[in-house]
Length: 167
Image (tube, rainbow, N blue to C red; front, top):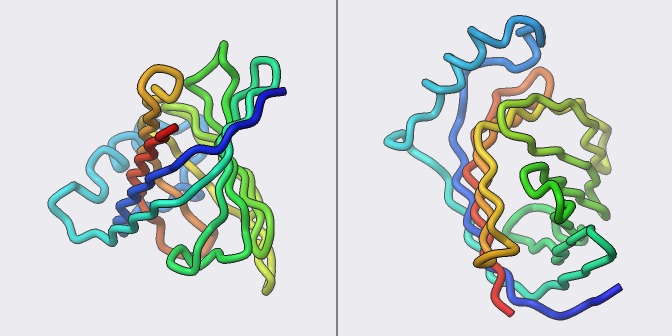
């Protein structure tokens, strides 16, 4: 296993979305895909979060993991986020948060995944629908994710996540 310190820059743009990911059955993805394509167009108002931090790159066999501590600005201070993928399958990215909040989110273009998001108050069921995964971490140190996330019973958010790793 190889481990090294890296600098990580993250920019996340968050947009509110009206559509519910829970209300559409997996077999009926046609309508959902259209709704997602129209949801949260770039010209809509967004919240932008920028983070510059130090982290760790771990290479363990074919598993690549970038880890960093969350900050107060993300609202998840006390948690560690890890972005992981397999070298032979870079288009499936897993983001794991452990600490004051915990969850494992799976990003796979065109797919929908359900998970549990644990908070100090109570756990929430989350649905994640990934529109785009562009993983070039192994080439130029960048990762782009475009996804919609909904906590059951709350409004959904579309996130455009960009991570750049500098060694």
